[in-house]
Length: 159
Image (cartoon, rainbow, N blue to C red):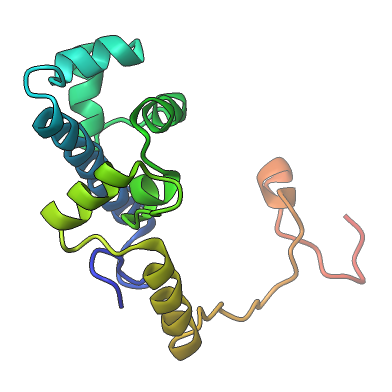
């Protein structure tokens, strides 16, 4: 399986969400650092926070995976020339990322996999180990029990 992507069965949903947020924050930090390397002194956390219309504290929380407002994600993509595939999956797309940025990110961070390779490897992983869903033992009845406090009636019973 690809580095950094663990099977859902291994992680709890909350732990997987936290890990994903931390990885995405790390990729945003790498993005900012690539710009800082390109133009020294012009891409600090404070400067990016001002450009994105957020506080420096919020920028810090985003880079550390503690907070992740989607509107800020889209502003980062728009203003930086990165792509959604890079931020979400760690798989930069050479067709939708600035060429110098793609080169710098993939050279500085060899663990990043270009999107075409990511898709091939991910589909191969899914073919090898498909996602198994547990068999249902009862019929789905919506929030009946939550609304009434009574158990879900069988098909032939009336509520």
